[in-house]
Length: 283
Image 1: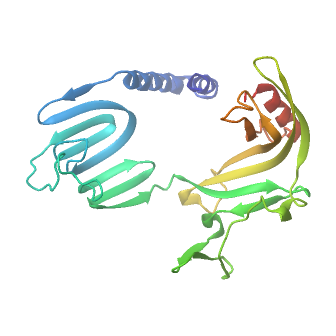
Image 2 (image 1 turned 60 degrees about the horizontal axis):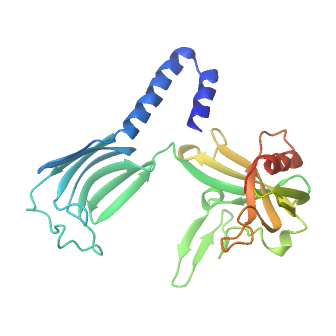
Image 3 (image 1 turned 30 degrees about the vertical axis):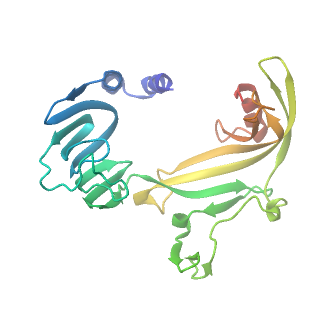
């Protein structure tokens, strides 16, 4: 997948910029495949395969025997062991149920995390994507949308027994989401049934009926949550077979009952997408 991505970049990027991009990719691969691990009395240093940014002090836990100052930048991780004077736990008496105290900041999973003692607080960066909607194509050619709480401007209010939701129009509902599995949608949503043939590795042929729906998922950047600009839309067919299919059919693991497949482009029809799935997808 990465080599394919590199080839696409070579065709679409400026040659001068692609030269530096390619060098960067190979540098990252080199780092990830080399293992550096230095352990001394007062510090440890290693290169990891994941990126992070960390400046914290934390107590010992079930892995580390000493309190430490943690300094991490991208793949480089440095741990400087400090005195136990202000720490409650050592590795021997660490209580996992209470957790260790930690103070400082971390950046990972597209969030800024602030650690203060046993508590944490996180803030999403403006560029992170948030899920907006799940949509299903109707028989009349329009989309039936099921918006997330963010997409609907829904606010949760809790009581002792259940959660309720204040909708954008001011009404209160126990559930804000739609369940497209309910019978009431059978005559509303578009469904197409196709004959499906799958040839097992041993030569046996499986013939099934496949019910296909068209769906979309949408994500938007956090700081552009009410605008479609820079949104990510994933359009795909949702496939449900009338019986299990694939190499594991009949085994204790069971075969495939349902799956999905992405449209190649907006001009591809439902049947064209399904036949491409039938030809290329191994189950």
